Length: 282
Image 1 (cartoon, one colour):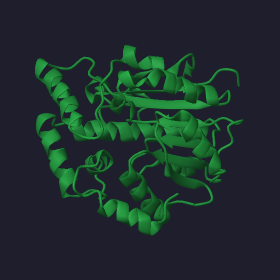
Image 2 (cartoon, one colour; image 1 turned 180 degrees about the vertical axis):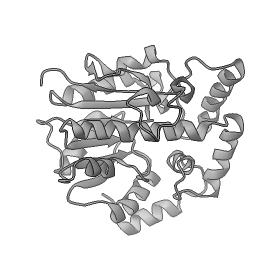
Image 3 (tube, one colour; image 1 turned 90 degrees about the vertical axis):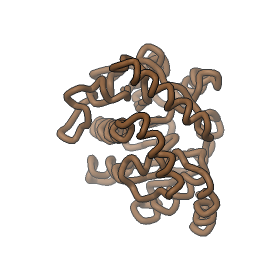
Image 4 (cartoon, helix red, strand yellow; image 1 turned 90 degrees about the horizontal axis):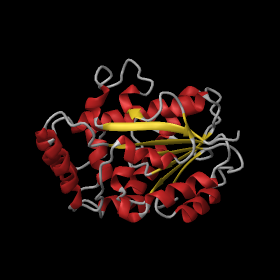
């Protein structure tokens, strides 16, 4: 975990370009973003007016999925590509769900500025004995697990909830996500849970929206976070042979919606798919 002063320097040195994590924070109503991030966000929203609600959908799905994991008795969470720990992050939801506050959470991000912000923000909201933010790249599972274990917070012989929320649309097929996800699944104990979501280009309402989604991908090609959208059929493979919890891989608002769920009455308009898988053998 980086120090406070080093974190401040990382933040200050990143203000010459948009940060995907801070853009996400802006759309969620957070205040850990800057003019350059907001300018990029406005460009996206001009082409895709509902982009902020899509991102809220991803964040709301995360909270509902983490809550369900905690209700099922899982107390260990690894959040890869966690971005900025704004309101409703994993450790807050887990602690709200389990009043005994016995959950342990490791946040991982490969973007230095996201890790820096995480360090600063967790200092205000987290318990350093149970929560940690570390550097790591989703595409390097062996190194990620090595660093996770170094924290002393996670026991891989017991069930873990592995969270990869709103990240895989930044991972192109050409980078080999199938073998990467398989490596993460293989390392986890039976009974572990896998929380996955990403944006989809499935069933656009019109040709204009289809083009707008393509434009979104093109915009991100100009950043350090290029990626691709996937259909449900293309995405389900990342769960491997794990059992999908009800209601399966669905549009995120259809996954156990509550009174705050955006697009609850029309889940397919959310442009976000998600699900939770459980490793057999428990």
